[in-house]
Image (cartoon, rainbow, N blue to C red; front, side):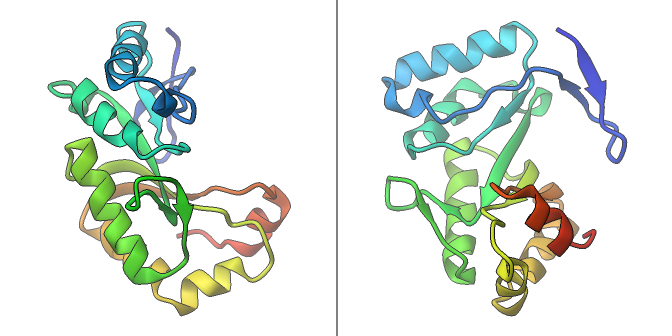
Length: 165
C-alpha cells in the first residue's frame, strides 16, 4: 500500500480508502470481515458516510484493538439515530448523532469530520446561525474531532462559501 502524509496534521494515510455505503446492506459478520481484510491490506482510512446505520456498530467491532492505527471520517449532519440514513442541520440532532456515531464506533474521537451536504448557497449561513459551526469548533478544541472539512455535491459552492476553520 502506498501512503501520503497530510500536510496539516502529519497523518500517514493510505492512498486507497474504504467507503462504507454498500457494506451496511450486508450481514454484520461480512461487514466486519471486509473492514478487517481492508486493514490487513494496508487501508487505514475509512469514510463512514453510508446508507445504513448498521455500519457503525460493525466498524466498532471490526476496529476493536486497532482503532489507534486507523483514521475515521464522519459526516456532521448525517443522522443515523433512527436506524436509517437521515440528514439534518439542527444543532441538537447533530449533537445526538455525533454521540451516537462515536458510541457505535466504540471510540471517543473521530479523525475527520465533514460538514455534510454543503450544496447550496446559504448552507454555510444556516450552519452558522443554528450554532453547528460553533459546536464543531468546540469538538475540535476538545479533540473529539481532529480535522473539520466539507462534504459537498457542488464543489463550486463549497469552496466559495466556506472560509478556513
